Length: 254
Image (cartoon, rainbow, N blue to C red; front, side):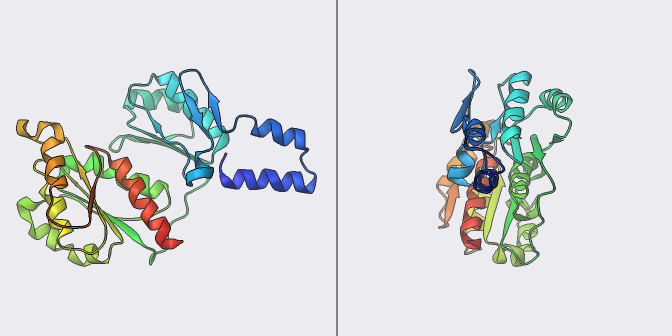
């Protein structure tokens, strides 16, 4: 149950539209619902301002569909990450209102459109080193948009042709948060960090040849960046970077 639904329920009790017993019945599943294989945190939106997001990798199609359906009963927006096309097809049969993006591997449910942010509102700029990094970059960008944030993208601006990045300098300088997504040696994040004054969130990806070690080389490069003001999330964790950036924007707007 999110804040709006709880406020509506309390107003119905206050006005006499709902009895106390009816309200208690609706609140009975708080703070979580036990599905045996999952305990759904229905209280998270009230605590953190964001409902629980479902990490779908290694779950069965039926588990994913059931978890999303139960969350959908309590929230107006539901998000699933790391969703394979096979699981997405299964879920969409059960929940036809679900939308799926194969690049970001995100499943989304939303009652009504997410309001578009104002043109002059704070924004996150998502940059990626190469085209191969785009799935992780899109996981970050689309998660931010799902949460109602303004996002500007600049892809394939890696250090192998640094002039491509420098062409984006005006947008980079005006950004309120930057998410830098890069594999190989992960140098993009350090370069971006040295150009701007806003917080930079580095996302190492598992893209690269053998000595990349599935993203470990990019992770270590970002952790050892000499540019200040950089935070680093786990390998391929575009979602985690998006939530971190969203929390910064939310504090700015508050």
